[in-house]
Image (cartoon, rainbow, N blue to C red; front, side):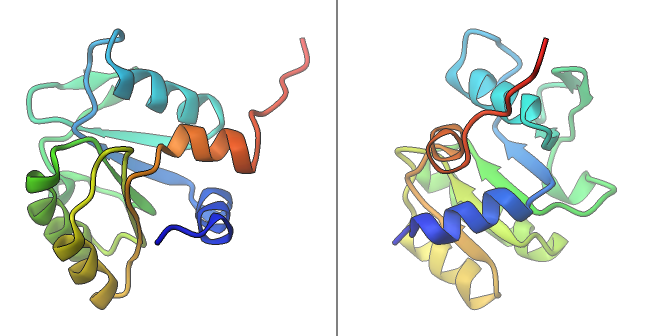
Length: 140
């Protein structure tokens, strides 16, 4: 169960987001969601084995290849593809696994929780940021 309080705490404390399954195609929903998060000041690390760079950031083939610590592992993959992502998130010491809207895998979520990670399922990180924090106002 996702509580708004917990999601807001995650969004306020997280600095680095590894986006697993992020598309390099600007027309894809994942691209727009992550672009918004980047615009809000999050450090975005694309995880896509088919890309070398997305949004001007070096892309990595998997979580284990990322040379820095990650706060949130954001998942844009089918529910059945989540368990190995959770295994890697645990291995690299991530604090949170955030499964985007439409993605639910109870078994993987339970494994992540047992390893001490916070879990958000079936919620859009951009939508939750907009609702709970609001876009940063940039004065022009």
